[in-house]
Length: 445
Image 1: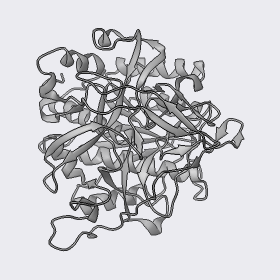
Image 2: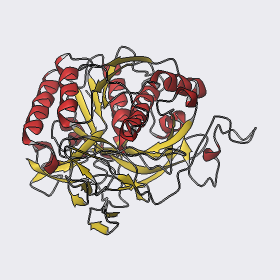
Image 3: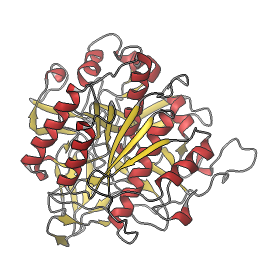
């Protein structure tokens, strides 16, 4: 998967193969040029990248920090506070005493400065950020577009989790590359060392592109995490019902893994409309526009788990389980310098299901703080709420939109992937929906 963001001067480039796990990215056409074990797709975004810039770009006295917050802006954006209001996140809970574990790849030499810039602009407390390199710290190459792209993923993951649970410690565990085996090593370290009670993963690939041995190793780690009462999240992808194929030349209908593992809570994306600057919730639809589409569908590896009985029609596991705001247009403001110290303090619009996984992880950290013990494995509890009268009290049920997509292959030819519709109750686009957090926390035990 590849990171979704809006930016200027830098075009994100991802990497994909049967051996690579990718950060969620901009709409891309896969590259025809292949290197064994590692592919680099060329970006073919249908829109011009939009630079957001420094805080204070909105007119003085307007009540906005950024011009993208103003009514009628070409691309709309939200501050962390506006998102917190929209999803009814209690200000009394901060994640104090909790640790959120985030797995990413390659590293970001300016992540501490970027988080400090985010804190300064939005009035957040200083982050307690701990960066861990379990297999050694790789040298960062600012000319490698794949590595620079991951710095965007890291900035989004860390800053969005910190914004929701500002007093929680964040353990950022960096894999030495985005090859599957290296990502698995980072997951193993996070779980075996029980770094925290919540784990976020904003990456994935088509199930058929991940070696069975990796699938089994990761599943064993998620079993171990459940035994330790760790809650595990993963983004469902940004290409709707599609995933890039294994040589990255085209697309196929597929659920993304690790989100499809039943021991993981998969997170999809919506397009959120909230009043500004108050942030009052107004409406949501499934995310599907020129910037991407909420990943979702049915596994071919995992049979339907018991928690989806009576919910999903297929005999196989459906994803995602839940959703969160992820449209680039209605995106989150994130400080990001791309690993370049001279660019610290620059803000961009970020979106994608990458935005949802770390924020759901942070919400769970709030639940852990509130109850004084870890919630642990979450899917059984979430789906039990869907069967009860509390469902529309704890979730915004998303009933409009779909994740059918038309994407370009490496030759520029359209690839049409028929997806699924958002319907009442669970669906393979937005899952059970997005949270009313204050209400949800009353029931997460």
